[in-house]
Amino acid sequence: MNPHVGLSAQPRTRLGTFPTPLHPAPRLSVELGVEVWFKRDDLTGLGLGGNKVRALEYVLGDAERVGADTLVTGGGPASNWAMLAALAARTRGLDAVLVMYGDPVPATGNLALAELAGARVVFTGDTDRTSVDRGVADEAAKLVVDGRRPYSLGRGGATPVGALGYVAGTLELVGQLHERALEPATVWTATGSCGTQSGLVAGASWLRPGYRVVGVSVSRPVEECTARIADTAAGACALIGAPAPVELPEVRGDQLGAYGRRSDSGADAARLVARTEGVFLDPVFAAKAMAGLISAAADSRVEGPVIFLVTGGAPTLFFAK
Image 1: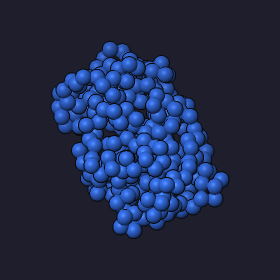
Image 2: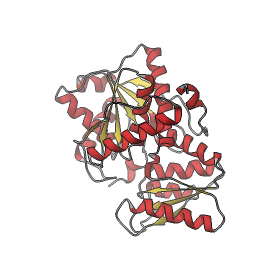
Image 3: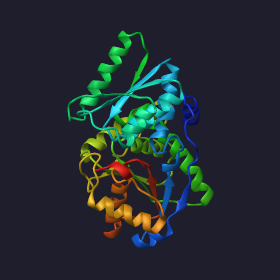
Image 4: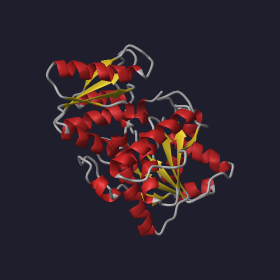
């Protein structure tokens, strides 16, 4: 199968505004001593934007293909994914059920926005994040008993179908690079559930753009990220008939911390970017990825130009702990 044909054949529901801008970050580049460009996926258009919109276009496309009437997914109370999934579902006429780990908490930030969109929120009562996966399965089973047609999905949309969002995103980015005659050495991104980096890795395996994809893990051990990305990227490539990646994904673990929590290095990175480029980085994902880039640049371990993926997450600017 021709991968272009394979990707075009995948069900896709248009939710975002694309292409997102690609622009230089000149003052930050001077500070870091390496040329940096921003890929502005904080400006994807649905809700307050963010990288998850790309995954949701293919997830909702698949849900509509199978005739689902309810999207069931989840995460933490501050989950960007869960909030955007609820918005995406409602814009397509589907109900949304969100399963959150832990005990009920006051609705602020992303949780408040998800409820505003009409999502039904269920808490697992268990602080283990994997309790979400069990809760999603349980809620989907209840819906089936009630005669509904649920489409269930794990945390972050990190599936081969969801990863297609950044396969398409890679195609978009490569076109922008060609327009600018820009040949970056690396693309940097935050890595949480691993879906975004999986799509970027799959896209690079197909299109061979000549750059490396570097993920900065914000919570998971590097070994876990590497395995998840390799599996998900291979699955995405199989869907469109592209060659599977042959090299292990590149993931940095120097910014690891508690999921959904700020870090001192991330706060410093966000402050630097705001003061040099007028761009806000969310404190729990993109800011930590930038902290990883700053650290690597300080040790002269970064070759430019660098494309830094601004992944969004605006609500956490106000409510992350």
